[in-house]
Image (cartoon, rainbow, N blue to C red; front, side, top):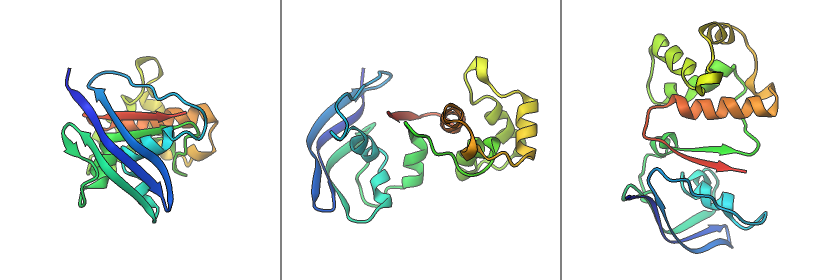
Length: 178
């Protein structure tokens, strides 16, 4: 089976703090890889490197290579919106946007240029696992109300966040931080 991700001599700094040192790792396509270690050892920092989330904050720096299907994700000029739509992150404490559940799930699709209301609704309806899919009535009622997904219980926030990623077209790569 071919490599999905190949990490070569990855180093990462938060300002002057050298947080990740010389990481080399291959992750195969269609396999699950678990990163296990104590709190503060760099698991989340490493995962955030994989979709360049650290670029949102000044003073952070990468060295080495992170290859996704052979393309170096650390290249200058890489379209980070496309990267983040492909490499999704789900965190231990999900943070949905302060908008309805429907709008949270549809947000990524809209960012990718989907404008058709019927296509948005169809993808939002299908974004959950078979037993927990939103019914058409739930989609319609949630779209019309201002129910704030950010005010939901923790497990519901997590489902909204995962559904947002699942609604987008393949190929997708997932990283979960717990």
